Length: 176
Image 1 (cartoon, rainbow, N blue to C red):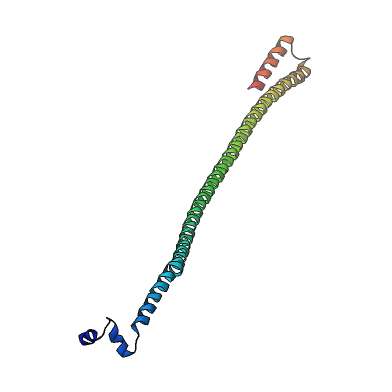
Image 2 (image 1 turned 180 degrees about the horizontal axis):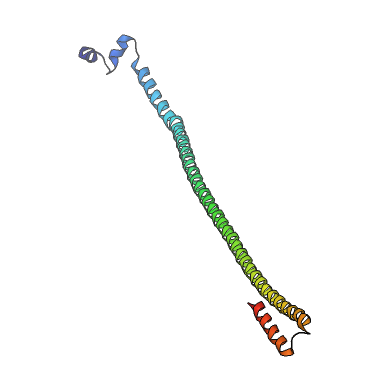
């Protein structure tokens, strides 16, 4: 290879032996470099920037969607907790209302029983009072009848003093 380079007039002269024109090759290489540089700056770079921007937007969209899903799950969790709290609170309120209603009913029943017992006691006392009064009235009337009957039976036979003693004795026996 050194021999080929030494024999040619130009540094790329050895290529002419292979049928390659080195001036054309260099100009095409320069043209390619210029076109490649122009394409890099005016096409490839904007396309990659647009693709990167698009990729960043997609990533941001996915992150936002993930964040929204997390927020939705968190909001659902909070809503479930609040719902459970509301259910527990309503259950507690219902339990308290039932207890208060039961207590009110028990109180009303107790008051009715007390009032009934009070009325029964008054009625029994009244009955006992009436019984004693009627018994006393009957004794009094019976004593009067016995005295009248005895007076009529013995009116002609006994003296006034004997009659009085007889009436007293009869009244005493009736009171026993």
